[in-house]
Length: 228
Image 1: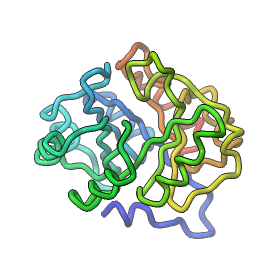
Image 2 (image 1 turned 180 degrees about the vertical axis):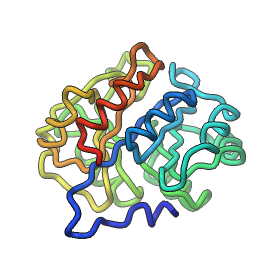
Image 3 (image 1 turned 90 degrees about the vertical axis):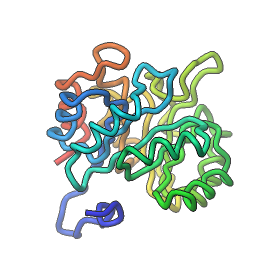
Image 4 (image 1 turned 135 degrees about the horizontal axis):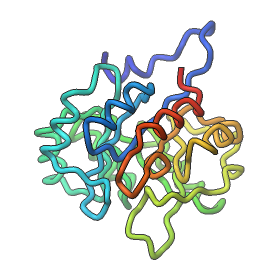
C-alpha cells in the first residue's frame, strides 16, 4: 500500500477515523505495541539532543519490520542534505517530518530532492503564530500543529507542553494536519473534540520516563483517540 493510497478517504458509510502517530520509538517491543494499538504513523527521531534519538542502524532495523500501510516517519531538525542522504540510504521511510526552522523554500527543495511527502511542524503559542501555518500549508504535504517550545528548551518538540486549542478550533488548511503538544490518554479526546483534529501525535505523553515508551499508555492513548 503506497502512502497516497493510505490517504484514501473512507467511504461515507464508514465512521470517522482518527489517525494516531506514536513518535520517538526506539525498540521493537514498544513499536509492536504501537502497531497493535492501531497507530497509523510510527515516528523515529534523528536528533542527537533528544532522549528519543535513534541511530540510522537502529531505525533501519525497526522500520524494516513495520507492516505495509503504516507510515514510517523521520523526525529531523534542520538536517542538511548529507545527513538526510545517509538516513534515507538505509532506512525505508514514507514521510519526512521537519521539526526545526526550515524555511518554505527548504520544504520545497526537500520534496523535490527525495520525492517523499514532507510534514512541517509549526509551533503555536498565540494567534500570531497562525500565519506560519498558512504559509507552510502552501508548500508542505502535511502540517504538524505543535506547542511552541519555551526559549530555554533544548528540544523543538516532545516537551510535554500544550497550547490553547481554541486558537485553532474550526480552522482548516489546504493540506492534512496533525495535532501535537502535551497530548496524553487523559486529554486527547477533549483535544480532538475542541479542534476537530483527525490526526494526533504523541511522544512524551505515552512515556514512563523521558524516551521510555509505555505499552499500556500507548494502548490507552489510541483507545482514547478513538482508533478503531
